[in-house]
Image (cartoon, rainbow, N blue to C red; front, side, top):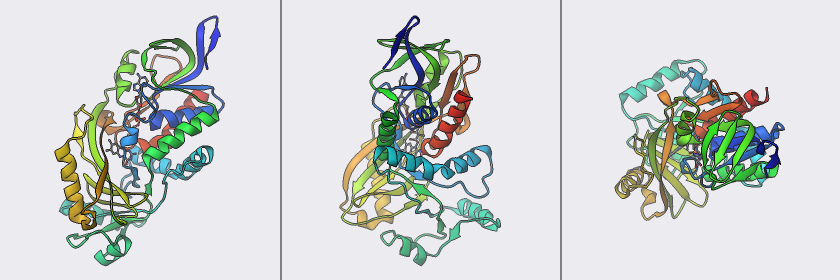
Length: 354
Ligand SMILES: Cc1cc2nc3c(=O)[nH]c(=O)nc-3n(C[C@H](O)[C@H](O)[C@H](O)COP(=O)(O)OP(=O)(O)OC[C@H]3O[C@@H](n4cnc5c(N)ncnc54)[C@H](O)[C@@H]3O)c2cc1C
């Protein structure tokens, strides 16, 4: 566990936070020869990460900004990332590249796709209602003016990915301490928990939404705001979807094994309460039933609300905490923590190990 030395207890590299970002970073650092201790306030995945839908959609061809490029780069790493997790943990993560179907709503969205199709290298397919029904026979596409199929999108089961990451970390040698909130960080770096003061070679803050408070203790301002997302998982009598079908920003149907479907999600900026609201869940289910009539009679298995950690302009910060040697921050991943986990982990590990 910890070494007791002249300076008190020492832990090689400390990662704070056991969400997808902290776990992926801890695994990458340990794999590169660091001796990692991960401190998690509650249990791994208790933050936003087990609340995700698990849809990893490739950015549209015209999106060429830095963030879209990073997402593409990270998605290109996904096959290897998942293979490592599945081999180390023995857990199947539900990863598949089955693409997704999008029914754009409104003229602006349709026109946006027209611009995409004008590009020579556009990989999206404009499909007919019949082609869509052939792919997803339980979905009613009769009201759709346009239907887009992107064959490149990935899907995962976030709960399984978190389980696989936690077990992989432990098998690789990461020491995971749950129920251990970090209450202060100082130069050194030194990390304070309720019971210990730990000196570390390196500290990585990956506390999702709460990273703001930890960064503030070091004089860094990086405001991360909550954006609540509510969703539910239902069990249907038969198959509903075999890939993500997206009707609007707020209505995605994503498959899970055994005829289960995840339906979500709301986007509610500034809401700190992570209890699902019955009326909002009922609304999501009612909207889903309109496009998937076979959901009638489906049993609700789980409902939830997660607080997405939104960094300024919806972008994460992955880098050093300025003015503090060997302290890094990787947080603010908003709606794309799973998309960016492999790349975020690699970037932090490169900085730490260089
Ligand atoms: C409804 C919904 C749908 C989503 N769908 C997707 C999706 O399809 N694809 C996608 O990529 N993303 C999706 N997201 C977003 C995704 O869940 C987040 O981007 C991701 O989980 C952020 O991971 P994280 O590790 O930064 O934060 P978290 O998962 O919140 O982890 C942070 C951890 O740090 C711990 N912590 C905080 N403070 C301390 C402290 N002081 N000491 C010790 N530990 C601490 C917390 O307990 C927590 O476990 C969705 C989110 C929601 C709510």
